[in-house]
Image (cartoon, rainbow, N blue to C red; front, side):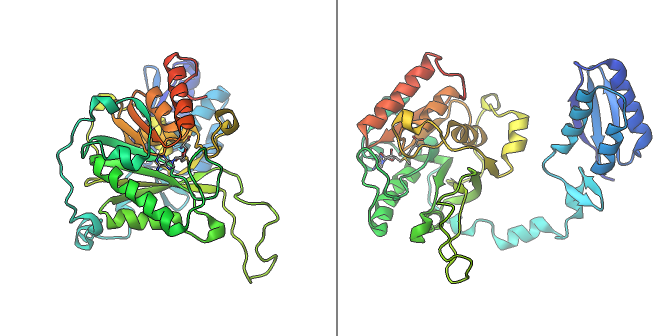
Length: 385
Ligand SMILES: C[S@@+](CC[C@H](N)C(=O)[O-])C[C@H]1O[C@@H](n2cnc3c(N)ncnc32)[C@H](O)[C@@H]1O
């Protein structure tokens, strides 16, 4: 017999009579073996095994109680992101038992999970970041600067390298031959892997240059796998904008060479040595709602709108960095961005109570990044505006 899944609905702001009516009506409409509700002080405990959501919607619409309570009562169940299906009913509990694969765990073991990384030789001894690098924005070539850091001293790297699109950066030449570009990138990434702690995360935001037919996210993926990093997953950052003109078709209405269009970028997540990251419980700052929503790996976030104001041609928005840092790191962790640009990663690290090191080759961008940190220090910006 499956165990009930419990959801708690805070009803402290709703009339008590409405709450009583909702609970009584629910319990006389749906069989207890599927679901039931109980009113406990200022909360309704919703115990779920399975529920037909269409019937539930009809049931709620038939009640003469507060509209807001109806909305909350629907949303609290409807927003459960992970569930199974049985006929017209959503399964909220025991749905793993419904899976078709028998002996899933044993089979997983015999296949040898992340086999490509299991013979790594990473040390498990982590080190402190030397104080001269802590909470600093440093203007340098990351390849040179990172060599000054000890092994295993960074908890999480979040970065977006230059994509070689031919953008007008302050100092960096963004139109290299592709082989030279990857040589530059991977020399820096090798140093990044060295300085990353055992159990640390390396999160890279990339967008391929589709018109050159270079799948940069796959090439980067191969690099990480050859360097024994474990692939944790991939987030699709849905920007809802086209990467090219509406009229660029390649071949119009012909299979000869249609041009595919994209409205998203990728965020690749790799781990060093271990998929689990150690940290104190009191340093977790992600809320339950954020967690439920962000583990669904398609994130709709608008592109950064203030690039002109910051004077940088290729920034990602603070919201993207906020999600990455809160989902994959703890407060007080050390965050590195080796291509820090106008400093989005570092300012979000600062705002969310993490330590940071941001490196960029442009003095101009480093000044902007430092300025954003100073403003956050003065509390001149609201947390995520
Ligand atoms: C895509 S931008 C990063 C933008 C950043 N995520 C933001 O939101 O502001 C890439 C940055 O890498 C910097 N860069 C290029 N080569 C570098 C190198 N060898 N060392 C350090 N920074 C470098 C460029 O100056 C540019 O600002």
